[in-house]
Length: 300
Image (tube, helix red, strand yellow):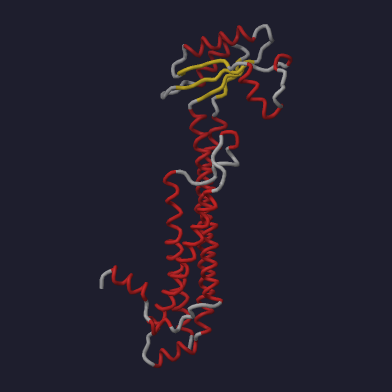
């Protein structure tokens, strides 16, 4: 018998064996609801982990090719040291471009913390220079030595201390997402196992009659496995559809609110949740099969 024939036979089932499995009731509703709830949570776990990892990756890539030079000096020396720093940067291998931020740009950077009416002219605000690297990058240690000699008030920040934690966070968040999926799968397996055991115990007399007419334990177990697997699969499909619908209505990504928006799927990531019902069906199949074989061995 081919694999396709086996799958078709599993889906269609056997009317005689199906009599041992309750078509509705507490265990059926519990299995369907558990699969739907776990699939719904799995969709959100995937969405949050992928979106947060995507945000950390984007920040890491942006910081990897940019640096900031901060010049702190008396007011009458700021302009002179800024020009000297720009000349140093223009002759530094690996620096693609360098420009001093205007007063309006620096005010925009400080506005989220101090408000829109910050009087920069009356405050000792350092001058910031934005540095963009080329594909080869520059020697940060060598540049610091040159700046120390020619621009005493300059402090170079190559964003290393910001980039490394973000890269670590991205990896941990992805691992946390997969751990969440594993825990959800384990919880689903436990619930389906309890439901299958309850159904087997409730139908002990029907099972005894089937044994008297020659049905084997494998034949009976297959009926339970089929019914609970299809319940888990259909419930998970419903939960996945509801979860993807809920994720679709989340706010779109915005640069001004990166943490609170863009938490959904993007591009090919929308295909990832479609595997959740298949995984739920596989979990239901394995859990029910193990529970049925164990319980049938214990029944008289």
